[in-house]
Length: 153
Image (cartoon, rainbow, N blue to C red; front, side, top):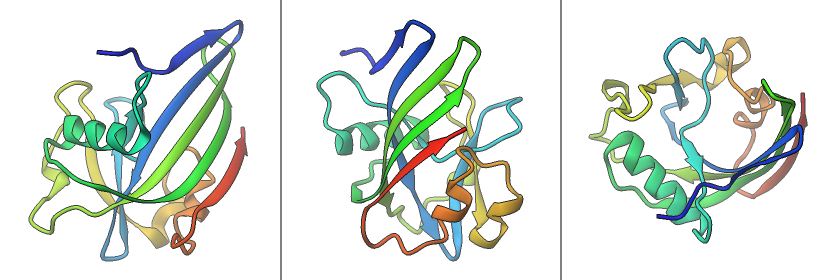
């Protein structure tokens, strides 16, 4: 197995991430880690030599225990924020993903890291501690064509 693309460069950390935008009935699927108090979109790190769509499909299988097919690329995100060591530099590709109707991810817990899942209404995003914060607005936009975002915190 190849390593995740997550590299320390002095006081910076570079991370290559894929994430799923899963929409259903005016809601988006979020996940959170125990004790974090905030939420994010499901997904994870790309491994060295791994194309991004299969990386997202692998991550969702690991987290949700189901096989899905990643859909169109919705967002390319350059995300810069502080972390415990210094500065975090993340490149993220966010794909639209459909879940089968009979799958209820809110009943699942990711056994590896304890992540839990919940649906959040799109209109409630501004009052949700979603990270990165720009997603509160971006997810309520038309996602039918790919957009590029640069987020600096």
